[in-house]
Amino acid sequence: MNMNTYEEVYSSWQKDPEYFWAEAAADLFWYQKWDKILDDQNAPLYRWYSGGKTNTCYNALDRHVEAGHGERIALIYDSAMTNSIKNFTYNELLEEVAKFAGVLKGLGVVKGDRVLLYMPMMPEAVMAMLACARIGAVHTVVFGGFAAAELAKRIKDAQPKVIVSATCGLEPGKIIKYKPLIDEAMNLSKTEIITVIVERPECEVICKEGRDFKWAGLMDNADPAPCEVLEATDPLYILYTSGTTGAPKGIVRDHGGHMVAMNWSMKNVYGIDPGDVYWAASDIGWVVGHSYIVYGPLIRGCTTILYEGKPVGTPDAGAFWRVIADHKVNALFVAPTAIRAIKREDPDAKLLGEYDLSNFRTLFLAGERADPDTIRWSENILEVPVIDHWWQTETAWSICGNFMGIEHIPVKYGSSSKPSPGFDVRVFNDEGEEVSAGKLGNIVVKEPLPPGAMLTVWRDDKRCIDTYFSEFDGYYLTGDAGHKDEDGYLYIMGRTDDVINVAGHRLSTGAMEEVLAELQEVAECAVVGVYDELKGQVPFGFIVLKSGVTEPDQYVIDHGIKAIRAEIGAVASFKNAVIVKRLPKTRSGKILRRVMSSIAGKEPYSAPATLDDPEILDEISKALFS
Image 1: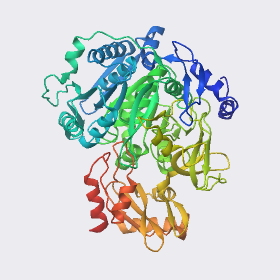
Image 2: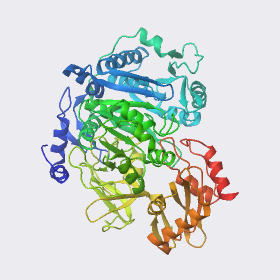
Image 3: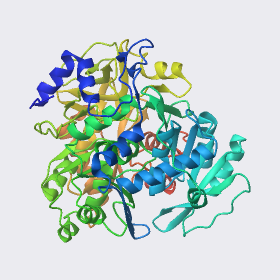
Image 4: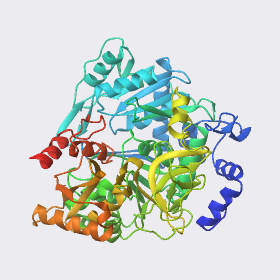
């Protein structure tokens, strides 16, 4: 694949997709080559590398050690919560993973069994994931500290043989005890499950005899387990994402296609080579943590950062710059909300001057829309390319991006650039007709989805097809709305439910947010649709001000209303906004617009299990109705 431009690479995929993905797979280790690159027997639930045999853990660890890279740093654990740093070489990480794989086997775990991880950001979490992959167990990681009722739903669905957890998670100013939550979840799900617990000095634990075991004791007596030879199509993990029915959807990923996508994307999307230092500032409970804290960097032979801390408050808005400087990070992948939090606390980036970022090459943003103001601010202070890219839990890697390992194509603010090879992205109207450039519509992807994308929903093929493949025949429904420009650049304007209908006009709340974000007083903002008897829906703005703003709230609101009228027009009917201290978000940083819409419209709502801090909802209500 010695091609120099993005267009050449994308065209080569279009001409012969199966040859393209066979070439990509050749970089990795296979016990046995595949019979078929693409298996369409169960379309639209396609399989990649059918008949091939491999092992993800072998490709992430053993392969590098056997190639003579055992002393390369594989994992850097940097905890701002405990003020500690610990490095693991590939040799050391392999030794720990093989031993914990032996622990799992000793507890009766065999290929195909599920192992549920409910852990904070600590090295043992990475080891447990890789240990599952090593023996063919299917891990399902649940965000540490998730409510017991939500944990119980995932226990019921996945039916794990073993749970791996820790005594507690650490947040600024508080300790979250995990064991009581696990016990409650087991009671709710009416199960008794063997539990392995990593002890942390911040919190003691009382174990239940015969059911609960301590990590350290089991590891002391463990025999290391070798890698199992697995089918490429065997499940690697289940990752739950919220479903509209209230029942979580377990997205299933495979070994073969997933590892090919991880390796290809690390090289071509992120421009990362073996030995580089890569940091995804996310959590292992989310897809970003699976793809780009654990599997992607290690399969590529990189050094990956596991950070336990926040962008601000641990101890200040210079935390990210400190991590980049200390560990000579080459690329950072983070949600825009983290950058906005830093910008709000340190708008002039004064703390940046305290650190040496000379090894830093690229900032990648994803997880939500990256507003142009955040991108420009980041470019100005960091003086490196700032790349917005777009993907989903269901895809595991970038649907659209700017391919730093191929060609840095021109950035267009507000766009996540162009489709990745493997993704034929279209924009449809509600009747399934492709719309012209600049027209807002439903973003869809032509089947088949590429390697790395979901196999199905756990134990529910029908739900997978009904949710993702039934709306437009032959296409995957992303659930996102946006448009393409005349150059083929894609603009994501929000989820389809973020497109509001104002007196018959389809309008993007994302476009309104872009206008508000340009105001010099605004740190971040959200615009939601609220029910209106006359117009159906009207937009409502929530604005968070930067530190040190002295203008009256009403001045900022009036300024915002005028700006939207000037940029979008009177048709937007944007007449209402409120100043709030902060926006309600999930723990991964996504803004909960639907909840804000319900509060503003005085409609009933329930606080989502993923809500970072429930007190924010009371703050929103007081700001609206006091």
